[in-house]
Image (cartoon, rainbow, N blue to C red; front, side):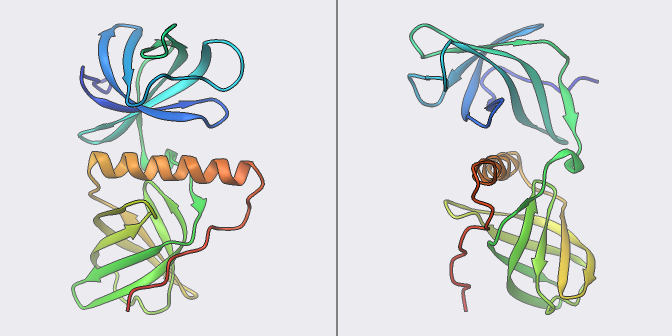
Length: 204
């Protein structure tokens, strides 16, 4: 079944090359999606008013995306995606993992700790810690810099001073926040900033 997209739903728009924004669905037709951007006027990088693009949105079971050609209206106040393939449900493994040093708090049944991430994806994170000893389900809070996201997950691996946590129950807005952070981090890496950004001091 094709993932549903509804009028009024918020989507993340990413143009090939990394430029991105958020918008809401204004109208839907089988292969045409009209969007109202959160910020106007919209000006695409480079010449012309169209680009190959992908929109991503949260669904009840995770996330979905649709590819097509994005056209900006003459006033820059509206967008139209001419989709050239059906909507596709995303598995969390489809999301790219990026290196990032971020503070993360973990609450398990028998312990609480604050650690730093080594990398992050929409589906999970790798922690630089040898203090986590549980393989039970955990709650987490992850500081992305501009905001903190939280949810639940499970510890799937503890090995050689690192622990891998798979996210289990993140809400739609949390997935979109993670996706935006990862897209921004990809742009940093693409433009030559290979080092991970400096992390805030860990809370004590």
